[in-house]
Length: 445
Ligand code: NAP
Ligand code: GLV
Ligand code: GLV
Image (cartoon, rainbow, N blue to C red; front, side):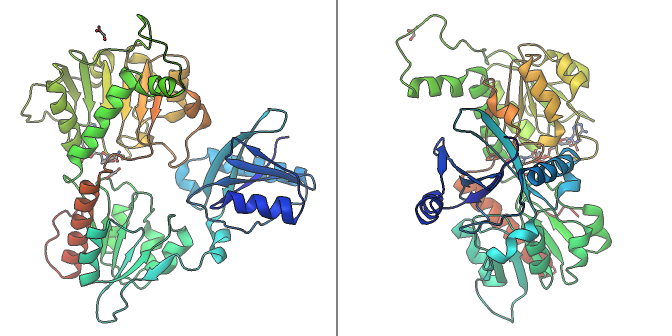
């Protein structure tokens, strides 16, 4: 059994009811997460997912297992190319066991175009008012951030629980003057060409590697972001990852919950000390400094690599790139993703690190060569790693999920209510300022 077509659904019990009771099909449920059945020579499955794009409708694309295999192979090729070439595809990745207990692994690639007819009401105009400038908001923001947008703009917002597809984004942006978007929204020249009235792209994030700056510049579109307001919150999260990886919090918490704690033991979950160790910071900007400042309280030695020395209000040593890799007990990444920083951490770099070292990435996934890092963790070139970000977000390779020496978070660096409200306020002020012809508080270009 090598081919299976999977669909996400928001209502797994309903699917079960329909296929089992109404159609009398033989189904099996795996890990209570996936519903699988065979149809003709194919395997079809449903997975529970709040972000489902297909609800209640199944499209049978293929007539034979052979055909599925063929398509699957072809699509797998697409998936192994650079992610930016893949923007037309959403990649869903699941795994399950068949009734004999064998692992099934598969990826299903859904073209966003194929999903659209199923969900017409993704974007709604929240406050119809032709007198106001038009803004597109690609996902709803915290309540407190919404009001100032509604006061100034006629807001078209994606009120669903999923991201907009490329085509939806293209369609919705066409008559808008302002855009507030997420770091997962790819804003490129083609999109800008389809939006002749667009004056501002206000990213609801500090990182803006999702936006083609050059394309925006030549089209005279302002690009803004949300620096500063999320610095301390993201630094806190980097520290949560530092503590969790070094002290094996995730493994030991799971162990405790599973009822396996039988009393204090000399050798139970031995990890690594953090205090008085060496913290390496790559990218000594706002967040890098906030992470380093917290390390002072832990009595740590702080080293960093930067293109030019920084003026800092704590003791830290500027070292060259190799020294930082060799001497860090904990290496934390805080660079933006640029052409220069893509895959900055690869095979050579991971080999230079200590076997006892821990790598923390709350910056951007593609700064690290993810397949190489997986090998490094499997073969213990380094001790552990903590991630908030991934190379092909939201896709996370199964190999990574299976490792016990990694901690995986779903990109929640800035995710506190206070900070998300502050980001909303800043993103709104940016958009309003540009459209009203005043100076934006955080303009990139
Ligand atoms: P920032 O203040 O601009 O800091 C980035 C630092 O990286 C700057 O000091 C910059 O140095 C340095 N840098 C850039 N390219 C470099 C290179 N090739 N070699 C060495 N240093 C380099 O930005 P920030 O606010 O701290 O945010 C950093 C990044 O974190 C963002 O771009 C974003 O991708 C990520 N982030 C993630 C989350 C999350 O949820 N996980 C939340 C917020 C931010 P110079 O000063 O010399 O230019
Ligand atoms: C989050 O990753 C951000 O860049 O704000
Ligand atoms: C541990 O709880 C100790 O008292 O050392």
